[in-house]
Image (tube, rainbow, N blue to C red; front, side, top):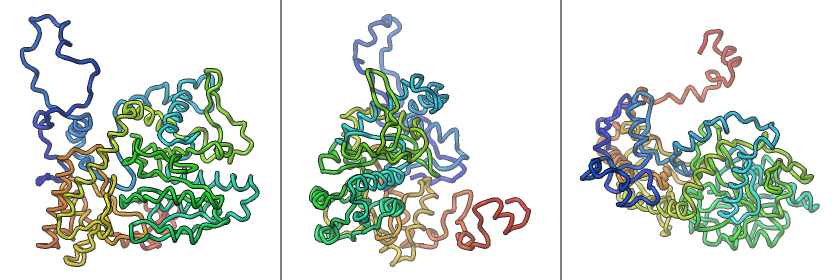
Length: 508
């Protein structure tokens, strides 16, 4: 824990003080003790150099701290509910090259063969991970991919002459809000199932609402509490029995990568967030992002166009699909994000992807072992004694009741120690005073310990001198923001014209 942290500086050790024996950024295939045989004997070292042993992420973060001491926080960020992981520098260099950065999507496909090959090959990788038959990358994020499914489901049922009757989409209260929102935007009525005693809706609740009116199930599993629904196959079967479709929101794919395939669970379609789970930059503010949408052959005729296809060794754009829903977004979507994701997947390989999932689950359970011992902090639904996967939702409700310190106070105080603000929860807050950290495969044990040490410190302060926490942050360039102004329509404006109308001609 950085006791001396202040927003304007980092208490950063020199690089040789960092690292752990055995940690590596790159491992070279074929390197062995005989690798120096081409070096003349007189020039060979008698002992290995005393170099720090760090991962690529450790090195990058160290030099970012040195170079950007006054530019904000770059500490431990366990941003949950949507996996956020390290973005390899190599991928950033690749997409900055003119072969990618200077392409125009309206070029003749014959001049885009390299990038179209990457799109096609990544489609094949996601087919292998999911069991689906076709992927499209046009959607601009996870919510856009969910909307893609809602539109595909609408077209599918329309083609079968059933759209007039199939007006309902079923989701759950713990699924991402975009599932309900996009279904409603596509014109469906939304049926939301409440949680049962095991942390997921009961089968009886699903049986009570499925009918010949059901267009689709749209659900995430595991949910943001980290609980996996073991009855998911039966859920899909019940929906299929009445002629509905099943869509798998894979926002929380990180803990099950290489461990399950959506098609083998019976799903007709799924989506992945390439800008998060597959090593692309997180889409702050709405972009860049890609929601990869995949489906079975039965739904493929309705996919957005164009699709990339391989024909006689060349890559073409297939727009001759009369049942297509048209476009969700312009051209092929954010291709640089697809290139990053392709590079990440090829670099990881099948074994690396499975190992990343294992590390993600291991890290979350290590967090659990630390956090459950901290006063005032409890897991969501503590009566549910099941393993959580790559994230767990925590509640500071007891701390709030006993000290008056709530989770937003905790988040403000964490900033005093150089810890990035954690994700709390999607609304509505089913869990009072929630926090949802997710370590993924990125963070080391030392990082997780530092994060937990800060929570422990704040808990001690909350019970001994709560005003220190409630008035935080103290070591940032700004103090607490007055949110009251944002609630007054007379003060805020979403356009410059509205601002001038409300505040006169004085510039903001």
